[in-house]
Image (cartoon, rainbow, N blue to C red):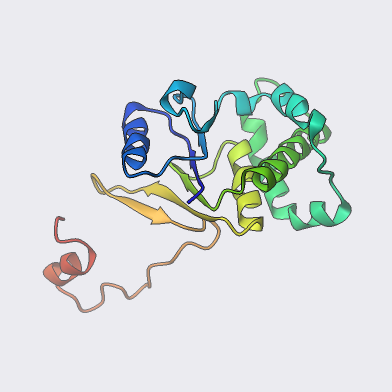
Length: 193
C-alpha cells in the first residue's frame, strides 16, 4: 500500500503513524505541522504550514510539466468554487478573486503532478479537508481514484466516524429510531454507549 497521511499534527497522531510503521506500513508521504523528517526516514514529509505559502507552489511548479487546460479547469470547477469560498478566511487582508484563482491553480498543478509521480493508492486524512490546499488535495485524489478516508469528530465521547467521501456521506434515515426502545438503539449503534 502506498499511503499518504494528512494532518499528522500532534503526539497522538504521530503515535498512530508509528504504529502503522510497526505493522510494516510505511507512509509514502506525511503531511502535518508536527511532522518531522527524522520520524519518517522513508517518507516524504511536507510541513502543512509550508503548504499555506504561495511561494512554495511557485517554486515547486518550476519543473512541473502539468498545465491547466479549459477542460481540466471545468473538471475541477466544484473544487475551485469551494477553494474560493474558503480561501479568503486565511488572509489577513483582502485578496482579489483573480489572485486567489492564481493561487488555486498553482496548488492544483502541484497536486496533479504530485499524485502522478508518487503513485499513492490510499490517503488517510485526520480531519475534514478545510485548509484550501487540502481541499484541492482531496479533489485531485478523487480524480485519480485514490481510496481515502478521514475521521469526522462526533459529539459522543471517544467516538469518530470514518468517512470516505465528504460530498456524499451516508445519511441516517429519518425513521432510524422509529418504534425502537433505548436498548435496541444502543445495541444497533454501539454496546459501549
